[in-house]
Length: 464
Image (tube, rainbow, N blue to C red; front, top):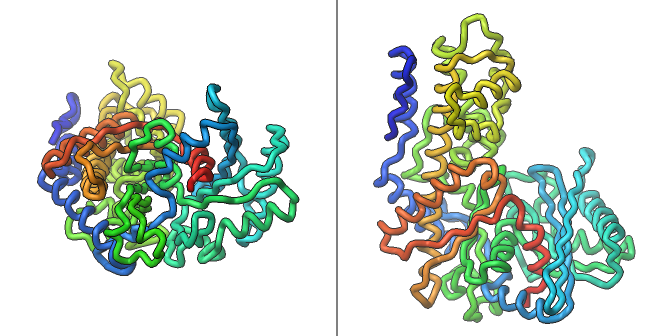
């Protein structure tokens, strides 16, 4: 465990900080156990959707050979559209990708906000069609083009272009459950007489893996570090006992699996939440669910830090006693993006002090600044190590699905890749270290940045 002793702090301040650091510390042995449990959960999820010690492991119609399909499309003049429906950020994103032999790819993107009064699946699909119309008019797209749709909700895919939002989805509005997104968007496109048809529907983590394959064709696993967390990998159909589709089951080509990693931790014997994690869970809208996600995802990390700061405040171990700390008492006011201050290495921690002044109207002493920076580091590094161990478990599963002994190539995307570099670096370092303890080839990582899945959705439309 790193030594977080702060020069100039009182014994009580350092003792409290040390106690917090010890509770958030994770050993290599614990990380190895976590990787093994993730692997077990994935294995059980391929047998049954209802195993309490399993992840949903939802099967996609996207196959590992899609990189070949993309290469074939690039040999001729081709165009496709991609649509992301993000229910967590209330946005829709559209992208077009155009291929021409011997020419660089032409990619256009546009972001739209989802109106607040959307209260039905039909209204959501109609809004999507309107935004598609705006996009093709802005970019003067005249020809008939395929549309790949991706959404941040779990899908039960019944065909390449059809997928219903899973009944057991815990994070979506009730009106979206069991809705066929492709069917709804297609109908809305028809009503507007647009030259666009849905040809692929995926979860965002699948489309992010496809986007990675455009640049790194051997990619066989993907991790998203966004408001939530998720991962995907390619699995051999013969190992998916629950697979009902005869065509997919008879295929020798690996198929994409949406692991729904956020749901890991429920009924876990390895995940060890602290008292602050239990507090976050108790006050959340989905108490008892998505346990692992609440320890590691963008949505929660800043709130964990805020709770630690308020405990320091309650113990009168941070900030002057006459300081107005009203804002700190409001939930989710310490954004995860603020945690980038842990990279501040200036002599007076100028960035830390500036953030506390601008965001919370708090004049922080140098010791206060060091405490806040240390808390950000403690929470961030624990999260990164846990994610790294989980990725090692996924790498083990992905490697078992392959016929060769080549290293598993993993893509990482999402907003945390841009707002918290140390988190990503620690995740990769941990995944490699834990993978070695599992006797695996060291995985290869490619960091793609914040948003690849809209382009990935467009590329999915080329899938055969």
